[in-house]
Image (cartoon, rainbow, N blue to C red; front, side, top):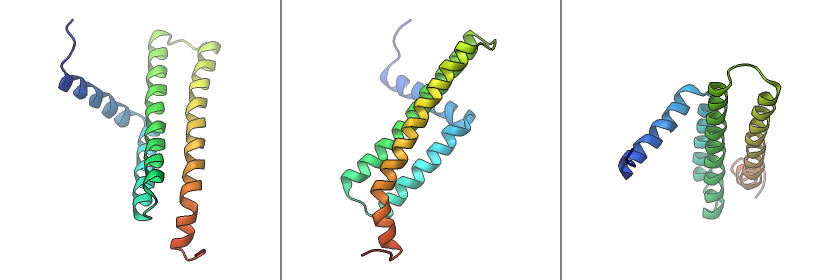
Amino acid sequence: MPKPKFHQSISIALKGIAHGFSRERNIKVQMVIGWLVVMLSIFLQIPRNDLILIVMMCFLVIVLELINTSFEKLIDFLHPDKHDEIRKIKDMMAGAVLLVVIMAVIIGVLILYRPLLNVFGLIR
């Protein structure tokens, strides 16, 4: 089978993202939260490097959730029966996503708390 052309590869990738977004609640929630955090960061006019870090963390959370969801779907397809080892694998993948979400929240709070306090007049 010949390799797809570049534009076809982009189209395939976008379909994968759209598929994940249309069927997975967590991906929808993470995309909306990420968009809101980026918009808030722009509104607060945080420094460029901080904005880059915020955007990177938002993308990392979504990318890892797409990977997690893909692995879960593959595992369910290959082994539809319940199995303790499969549950452990899925739990570890979910744990990886959770750790990245926690890291993103910590970074977001560290970057945004002062500008938010400043907007509300709580610090100068």
